[in-house]
Length: 103
Image 1 (cartoon, helix red, strand yellow):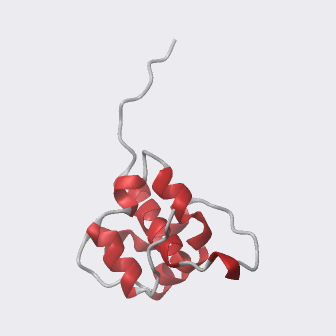
Image 2 (cartoon, rainbow, N blue to C red):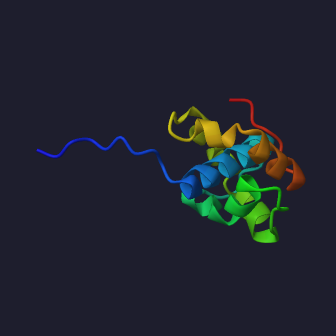
C-alpha cells in the first residue's frame, strides 16, 4: 500500500492559485458571461510576478480576469489559500486591475 505524500504543492501551482484568487476578488460576479473552467494552473503566467517583484505580463492579467469566478474556490482550498492571499499575489491582482473577492 502506498504511503500518502507529505509534499507541498509546487511553487508554480501555488502561485497560479494565488493569482486566480486575486482575480476573483475583483470580479463582478454578475458580469460572468461564459462558463470558465477553474484550474489554478491557468495562472502559471503569473508565477514570475508572484514569486518576485516583476510586473505581471499582459497574459498574466488576462488569465487573472478569466479566472475571476474561480478565485473564492481557490481561496477556500487549504492547499492554495496561502498563495492567493499573499501580499505579492494581491500586488499582482491590483496591478492587473483585479479586486480581491469577498467570499
